[in-house]
Length: 206
Length: 206
DNA sequence: TGTACATCAGTGAACGCGCGTTCACTGATGTAC
DNA sequence: TGTACATCAGTGAACGCGCGTTCACTGATGTAC
Image (cartoon, rainbow over all chains, first blue to last red; front, side):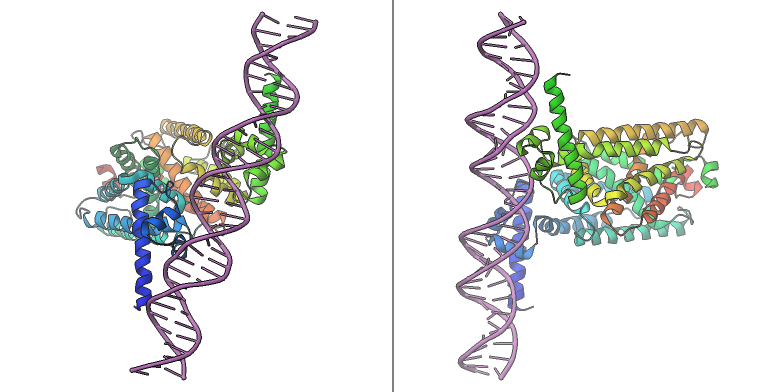
């Protein structure tokens, strides 16, 4: 890597560090691009050169921390627990992580998830990777005989993620909602998805 | 209602009609509050008097149409069909409705659903009402013997809505996604939630 | 019933703010010969 | 190896735009007496 490229990376890192600091302390909507530039000791125009707008900066600044949180959650996952318990372990880790700054992550998710597809490459890839990992986990359960062979693992993974995500949004939107309440709600939803709600006669009939 | 109140309602309606028109033709992000005021033949300041900001105006301007779409979907619901088919009927009607202007409804949902709780009273109440209706529908299925008695109807209603909502967002975020693909995806997810994915041994064991 | 006053929806102009964009410029780094 | 030039990250100032807010004001409607 040439000298030019390293210094460029350095300024980029300076901006990211300043952004993370201000996003957490002042809140993402209370701090301006110029604030971040000043904090980083860099020209405002330079921030725009590196990140096309505030949302892009927000995404890049935060997704690494999320990545670490996911990695931590997966690493500490109890290997012998059942599918439901492993899912809930991940959820507990992640909800706990987001609980450190609910307001910030609410804004992050709002400004990325709901943009047109393709606007948030980092988080999109992160989600895809995770869904694949989770889908593989479910496939493995089939081999163990705990999950039915006719169940579509990709659909299951994305459905369970939808449930996880909906509860997460409720959690982030309501600052007074206790962490436990969110986890219990998700546990009930996930349990239902795993076991179904139809009587066995109906269930087989489908 | 006094004369003063009626004229006030009239200007409110003028603003709402102008807003609906411009939101649909120019798109919600391409038209300004001043554009809407001009279209309505009203002072810009007057718009702010009636609606505290653009998002609030967006919510009020569109939620009535959504209400009508829901009412239509419920009214045409086949009474003798199974739970899954009735759910899919509603979904088909609603996805079709949103398909008329995906971009507009994407922005609406982004700007309301993801705000702090309490910022969007109209849509919040609409969702609550619908979840209650849907929950009652599931309770009734219990009496018919198609849904298990030990299944929590409220959890089921909100879970199925989460699945519906996730697919809807994917649909709105991707302008090229065909309506049928969204419906098939949702059908698979909903079917899974109704029937579960665990083998019966595991399912009972929970 | 009439008068005098209070209320209040609506007006239009102005202001401050943050964001994105543009511009000509600097100066260090890289490269061609 | 040295020189002359090209490249490009970063600068700082300026601009336009949309939003929200404020302000003093108008004039119709409502109300107290």
